[in-house]
Image (cartoon, rainbow, N blue to C red; front, side, top):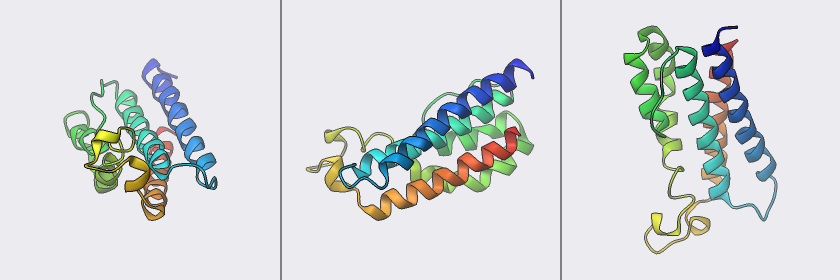
Length: 138
């Protein structure tokens, strides 16, 4: 296994830990939906960064959509495959900052701003991206 592939698998394992976290939180009534959304975004972000590492490139930033879009400068074929997940990344990106900081939303806390449908959608989109990366790294 090449060093780039080893590093990609290491980051994908971290993404799977975030996936495990949102899986644990989902059935808990006391868990905040914002936290579930955040961990879903993190799982997708780390997975897409694993793609960059597999390509021996240096990912920068936290936007899943931008990381996918910027793959075009790394490997056009890989970008063309992952471009189908850019919209999912855009949805997940909304759960990166506002889910953690009370001043990220006007007059609301994260616990007040996110609903069950948001969490369920984030989980679904993150799982799609994580699985696509898993297939790519296999």
